[in-house]
Amino acid sequence: MNKTNQYLNEMGIESFWYKNTKKISSKPPPTANLMSLEKIVSNCTKCELHKTRNKTVFGDGNTSAKILFIGEAPGREEDKEGKPFVGRAGRLLTEVLDSVGLSRKNIYITNTVKCRPPSNRNPSDEEVEYCADYLEKQIEEINPKIIVLLGRIAADRIIKNENSMSELRKKTFFLESKNIPTIVFYHPAYLLRNPKEKRKVWEDLMYLKSVMKEYDC
Ligand code: URA
Ligand code: SF4
Image (cartoon, rainbow, N blue to C red):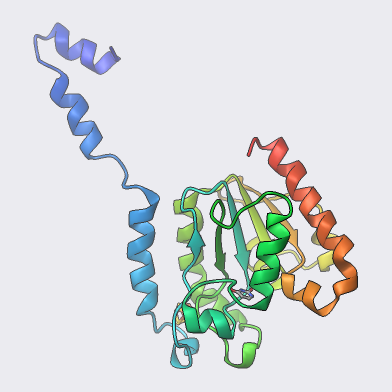
């Protein structure tokens, strides 16, 4: 019996209601909050990107995932389907993750901005800033054990470190507010452009594996 219930019992008060009340007021599961956030995002007009998008791309995967991947922005396929990483780069990422036993079903994946920039240009600082609240809320709700940043745009937004990509890889950073170990990967589009760099992508994966082991994932 906990201290409060013991106290109530000593005063002759039945304490079962106390337990029940606590249960009812507990925090809703992340899925519920994320679903309402997804609805808000689908109507968002905060930045110019809303004018040219077909579908917003909120995120996909396991909302209780231990690993959260953050990419850059939706591309053409993603904009059509409303799902992240379903085009060429996405299929490659899925394969690469499968090769080390990480299924897309067990992770959560989203992007720094939720609408496609026209002609796949990089999102501007302003667009990233407008969309940042949504990403922060996703991180808070999913509360992952590890965050993986795919490429420069996500790395800039989250760890705000101007070193080159090669200096950011294979290191662990910690988010100021949450103390979540955060690592940087080459974006899968980089591997599509530079197929000879497979080894570097493999090193990124091995580094993730070692961080997973360290943080009990
Ligand atoms: N590249 C990204 O960064 N995100 C996607 O969703 C697809 C391609
Ligand atoms: Fe809103 Fe983000 Fe889309 Fe801009 S990119 S319209 S901030 S959801």
